[in-house]
Amino acid sequence: MRTRIGFLSIFVMVLLLAAPLIAAQTRPDCSNLVVNRTYAGNFAGYMNVPLFMGSTDNGSVGVVPNAGAGSITFLPGGNVSNTETIAIGLLGLHKDTLIAGSYTLGWDMSKEPAVCVGAIHESDGLLAYDFQLLVASNGDRIEMIHTNPGLVVGTSMFPMNTGSCHNTSMKGTYTYNSTGWALASPGTPADQMLSAYIPGSMSGAMHFDADTPADPIAFPDAGAGAGSVSGWDALSVNGAILTRSMKGWYKVGEDCTVNIVVVDTLGYPPFHIEGFIARGSSSVYAANVDTIELQSGPVPMFLMPITFIRAASEK
Image (cartoon, rainbow, N blue to C red):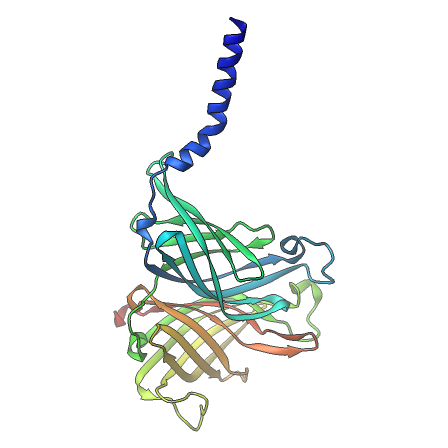
């Protein structure tokens, strides 16, 4: 009798230990919500460099802010393709980085209502990146958070336009906002900085005129086919409030990516912005891509994700 009771106890324990694995294997698949769809978004967060690199010897680099924008495509067979522009504090700007990997998705029936959750594992050939993935029940929004130690970054992403785009795909007035970081000027008190960066935010509007070509004298780098941009915004630079107006140019690629360059009345260097058109052209998810040359090499001037929303009167 004792032997039988002992065998039953072991059997029950094995079942309990295997239950999560069995549940994961039998969880209904929900990848149909995202397969063959592309999503766009931007992000701002932080990198704990020693923890991410698995080393305590990283010189004076500890926690640095980061920001960027990108797109992700879910392919059949559980594969995923990702293009990201990432600005990482004093560590540099990585434009149009191609990342590939795999993903899994399934309905978590323990939740009420059930949720479509899973994971992504990617690599750029040098480093691996992992995410928790959550998909809205209609597939029109995904939520991602890095699960790598040392990365404090989350993002929401939305269906990206993937048809043939042109300047008129981003036409009219868009409002925008951003909160992030700017490289501090010399003499800034250390207690007002995070790894040489100061906090900043901006909010305003830009008008994109596809019918008026960019001024070739003022903007010789605009190139053929560029439309014109005008705008204004308010800035908070480490708490100091500034206002400005802007002029510049923009160009939309056939792949629904956007390049924007503006100069302002405050005398800052030209701002270069890259982004992705999403939500049927009602939103554009972008980031600043300017760098400055320091003794250690080029570093991002701004760590600013910028979300453009088409004004209600333009819809």
